[in-house]
Length: 110
Image 1 (cartoon, rainbow, N blue to C red):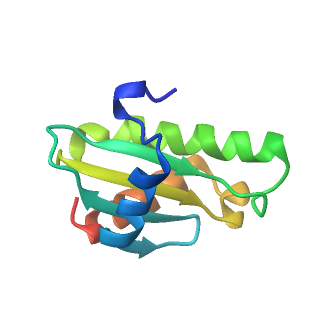
Image 2 (cartoon, one colour):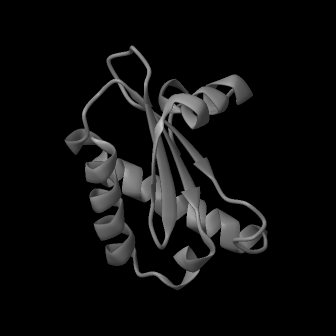
């Protein structure tokens, strides 16, 4: 699980990222990133009911948390990042998710 110190929790934090952040859209996820003025990155993960029922949404969240764990040390610090799962994430292999995540983070400037 993402620790409390690196997780976005409040609606206004998400709103700031959506308003001020850069957006990149991929097949399996959408990534928003905005500067936060801190020395670390903070993350928020969203899976809507479009992704599937609870078990499917939780699996998608677990996979996205693993993506964050794998890539966090390679990203520039000081950003709030929101990752939104898309429906097609259910059919993707984890290596496909990692590859797309690396590509989208690079495009958004991280």
